[in-house]
Image (cartoon, rainbow, N blue to C red; front, side, top):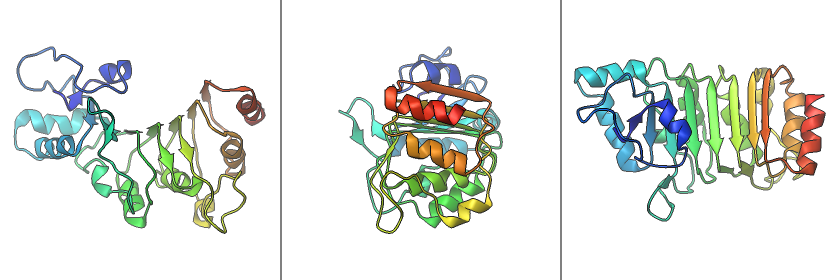
Amino acid sequence: REIFVSLEEVRKSLCQFANTHSRSTGVVRPRYARSARITSTEDRETALRILSSNASWAAALHTYVVEWDIHGRVPGRAGKPWLKPGEKAPTSMLPPRVLPNLCALRIRCWESQYIDKDFLGALYRLGGITELHLHHCTFKTSESLSVILFSLPELAELTLDSVTWSERKPGCGPPDQFTSPPWCAKHALALRTLRIRSPCNSGPFFRWLVEQKCVNVQNVELTMFDEDNGRYAAWYLQ
């Protein structure tokens, strides 16, 4: 009940753990279990064990779970990170390929890590992910973020909430640019919904979206923008 929760409850308490009370004192009821909320290594192992079990209600979760929600810091432990910065992003943090209706990936409090081909390949093989929601995440470079976006070919909805990236790496353009590797130019970024909250420097990102011809967004939600970032947003909307 602590891991598989309803999306309605997730929306109401985005950064809390196990604060929802089940409507049943028995086992998980699949009709409520719309999101898998992972807040520790133990959570991840438990979720995988449940999803691979032979129980009838566990099998039903394969159909009902539509969102994989990863929180990089363990709530209640002074924000201790379990997704620690390292040499490369772990593919084990991604959802298993037994969830046919999974369409949303949510990651919170993810410190900068190296994004390698194995991680990008695992993202691509997930298939039908149409929503990516990033909250309080920091990337080593803008390329680290851009390659993730292009590794989700069905991506239509993007949320960037307090997302930042570090200074450029040598040879990748001025520090005020948002860049992507050349292979990304062969693919389209067909976003329909874009949410940005509390940006650090949105200008390079908006310019990059225009360069990628990502201008057919139908729903734009911009919150906690200061005057400078607001000007960049206005330019993008025009």
